[in-house]
Image (cartoon, rainbow, N blue to C red; front, side, top):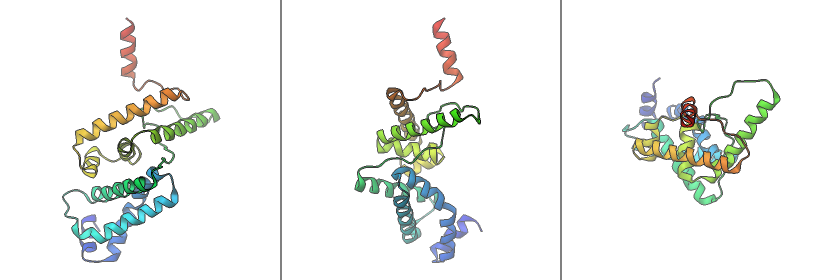
Length: 202
């Protein structure tokens, strides 16, 4: 059964159809919530609130954007409301080594390799907690959840170019924080930047 059919049936009050939509998106909604709250219990509460709100308002979904975009917008709004209530939000451990466009290191079974990755994640957690909610949100949606630029733009109700500029500023801010903290060594972001430095020496 296609998503469009499920949405249509859910609009007609078919609970089983809405439950199928919940099953399809529950994990991704929870991921957004846990990255924003650093609390399993709070993330579960937010996830429940998101789907309750979606169930009550699904009749208003017109399909101008994708169902996922509509659902993510509800999720981010709930996360923002939660942050305003709590006023002390941290971010769950990030497993994405490419968050700051750092090149992947080759997999290794050596203990020191696992330790380095663990330390990097801890530092990323701290850095993410130090940037603005606006920057944190766009980084989470793009680098953690893996949303497309177009979907992020629709979710945040901004232009796609705005998303890209926010993400660039967010990554720059995160990199600056990591460098200033000095607890990890950041490699070059690309071979191209290495070539630029080499050319500058000539």
